[in-house]
Image (cartoon, rainbow over all chains, first blue to last red; front, side, top):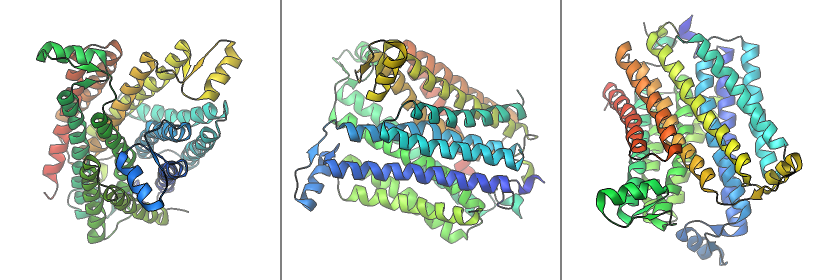
Length: 154
Length: 154
Length: 154
């Protein structure tokens, strides 16, 4: 019955909801980590941020220095933004095509694991692992895109 | 009945739809404001943009100068991209967990108000207000993430 | 019946699913094109990337040079991120307002075509075409935003 597809009693939808939250939490951890790195190295992009930081901690925070550690986390964050919202949208449509629970869960698990490992290998500067995990996440999304397109009018 | 969860007769879903549109409109206002600031200060990132601008207005627009006003709006816009798509996805899943209308509406109101006030305090360079409103929006999203995770199989 | 709105038997939802996949595929093509341009001009933002590239191809790839071709694709990609997730969310809500199939399909077609033509004109540096296609996509999204807001409690 179509009316129960988007309910937590449907194991495919429940798996989607859980994995969607997990990747969003991962993205928020990266956002927090950016702030943490900024405070540790004392480099901020807004003059009011370095001023506030100096007032509270009495140190000499610098304004807008191109710090390689900060820039690395920001590039990682941007890479998340290029892949995670697309996953969130496509996999909801994929759930609505009524896939088998096992196949769907493996798509979600592969994507979530790939993005977490991509994050770790990006921060560690570990190539070619980063490219490998990036591609694993994208292949999982593309596989769902193909299945949604096949269910549609094209 | 599950079939009417995603209908505008369900006050929780209707509140979600309205607030989702409001934050997206806010994001579009920021996009427009970026163009407006670029034209006012006469700074563009693409050589063809400054050429077109000069042709129409007969002024001397500069190509790719790191203007602090333009960069501030661009950072604000990027911060929106890090938070608003996550909110749109999580709160749809949250609606499907069947929360009480009052609690859900306050989640959406807090997020929408926090992001609007975050925008204003970012443009005004007002710290620690910006961090406060950023955190208010993130806490509202995280509260929904936790409730979706609890409804799922984890 | 509300329960069949989000099913592939509803032509409006099927059109949404197809066009959502098409714009996401377009975004992924831009991501791949960025990698392709990076390899062709031999410019990378991470030191480990240029090292890996040099190991495999025996050439002299440079680390973090502000290459205008690479920066152009990155700005284009960022512009996608500002518009496509908003479209994905708003048009799902728009489908749930129960619009007529013809009107809805034209909204989706205009957006998808506008974003593809925006991509081409950004890469070609063709102004004022780029601004025209950017606005066409935004007007299609805004028209759906207005219709969702009118269906809501505001």
